[in-house]
Image (cartoon, rainbow, N blue to C red; front, side, top):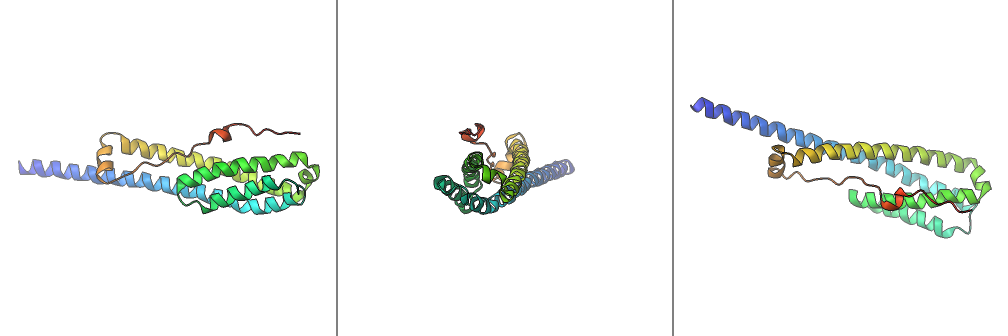
Length: 181
């Protein structure tokens, strides 16, 4: 009888350990994928001062748009929590869309090789951001399922595993930018 009780205890201990390790692995994957987003968003933020300086020479009376871009960039750079960074990233995307639309009103800017190069780098970075967001959301999805589904939710609750926030697109970012001529 003691062997049966000991066997059940060992099986339960193994299950708890494996479940805990699985939850930890998924949580770490979410954190790693967030770090990838952070790296790419930082790259985008680093490109912005060069882009703004290039535009300044051609669009001197577009100060408000340029100021909005710099303000949005600074808000992103100063954000420390992932939720704040997500919000700031959306604001930065909106400001960058306005900045890119300026090139339509300034043909000389549109033809500037430095602007074209920066625009291409920014486009590539935006593509990387899109992929990084997808990987992050996929890992959040797997982690959320694990901490919410029975029986692993018991272990998640006992050891304090907390949910993560999905990286969602703001409603304003879902609309295509309006180009005015």
